[in-house]
Length: 264
Image (spheres, rainbow, N blue to C red):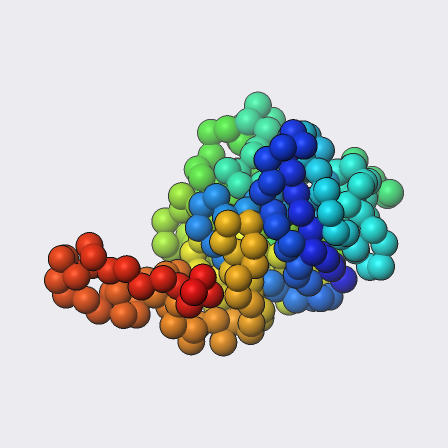
């Protein structure tokens, strides 16, 4: 479905952010992209969704194909109409609109707006809490409820591929479990492919079937979710356990110098 082929991304024609990134997302798959802050994960999503254009960025090398069609030069509106919808990090709700008005905004992408009410009911079936809050101003609901709202708003557009940027950010553990359960349900029932950027590596690899690890604008490791969970470097640097976590002495931790194997 989605094929990212050896792309480089620059901002302002000067700052090179992505260096030869290649990855793929198949139909109905859940794919995770892991990495630390500043690795280039969000830039990768924006390269796919076309939002780079709003930030004076561009794909300067390589290509991105969606169902066999090149999209790296298209604008975000055209890409969205093809069925690629990005849910931005930080829960970008329209704060002065009610919950239901936020959902209704997404219907402008639909060829048949007569289905809007039916689609809103469909969102409420995934997120019953939003039904209770439908007349509330979205700027005054909780962070977890706002995350449900932006996911629901994306779902209104009937996406073929959802790009999710840090959906667990700033949420309590129980809410994270609930959000990921619903994402899995959407993937299972709607057959929507999911490309997930997430620092919560455990939650991401529990949900995904395949994953990529990004550092300094490059893909340094990829494999099935099961393989990544067993990789010693992934365990140590992303899952929070392994050789470093087992060291008892603070002095040992402070002087721990082993480089990641993929950087060796």
